[in-house]
Length: 104
Image (cartoon, rainbow, N blue to C red; front, top):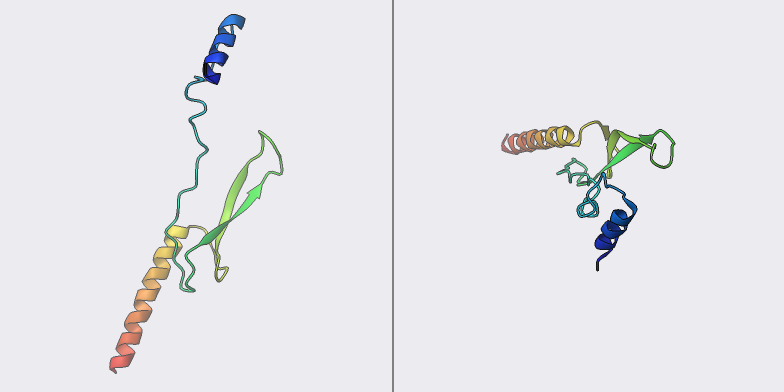
């Protein structure tokens, strides 16, 4: 007999009803942060979130991401996707400028 079956049987004996289905409550995993395709001109591929919390530990505790920073050069920004797009665009323009400078 599995642990879930024992819980169901005990709940039935005591007349307890479940608000959460015991079959699925263990299957739910905490929400994982999505992996960001980060790019910076310094060569880093990783950004670090800076969090601020309400300093409450336990069920009432919350935290917010205030901003991100590049793990390589510590540039600060709000949106890693937009920052990466801007950095890629800047890199492309710099490469074009270098290419033109070599020709001239």
